Image (cartoon, rainbow, N blue to C red; front, side, top):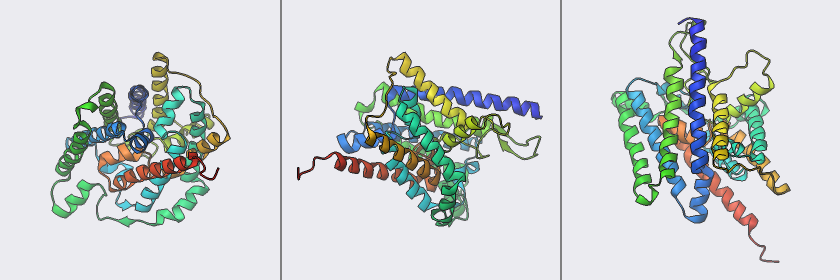
Length: 373
């Protein structure tokens, strides 16, 4: 494949990404899919519906990735989630901080984009704070602090950290077969949990879980199969076209915030190009805007008072730092990463829920009447 063909393929990758994420933005806006909302519903109202949407999405993504890996369409060992080094402290601490931040900021990274598409000006501020903090945590002084402290706590496996690789190294069973078995077993259990009660079987619930699960799989395929070039004509090495990590990617909404701001600010620098992550950010906002305008739900919303402003500023900063430290947000680790069956993602997932729960406790205490008055 020559350079012209590679460039043309790159454009196709971006257009596919944009089309898929526009549809996901529409789905998220229509169904109210939201991790923070799911935890708050369960904690405050004992309503587990949106957590079941999330469970269904994870199950669908797991099974889809397992099938694609078994058929040789993608190779999950070539993602950032499945390396041999398990940064367990970073994964857990980062996800807890992210969980706290998403409650203070009224939603996680994906929900922030959906809210921007619906006219929420608070989320525009969160976007900028999250993106700047994420950039500082990747490449700035916060990154130095992260690398010199919590990232030093890890253990290294003799294989990749995804469960199929770990078990294959111990048993000698073929990894693709193990991925298929584990993907269907764990993913099937999550789907069964979501669908066990017929009351969950509404159009919006099924659309949210199945649609977002398929969306994660679709971007894995776009990045890991459609955008895979075995031999780049410039480097003579394999390449995954237009990914920020240089590896196979699916959806995540922390680092792409930073790369989006970087692209916008340094647009005239020809080394800055559109990537899968940047286009996904634009796609979610566009899809949400289309849906909110079509359903007449679009409305401008701003901060109520100084405390509301402060909560969103702190929340955006915590999500930026926590999301980079944990190597992903509730979508990046909680859906994309966990679909690869990576150990780090299984560590991060409860951290998001714990962080959100702790912050909801704090907000309940903050709003409780003073018994001494």
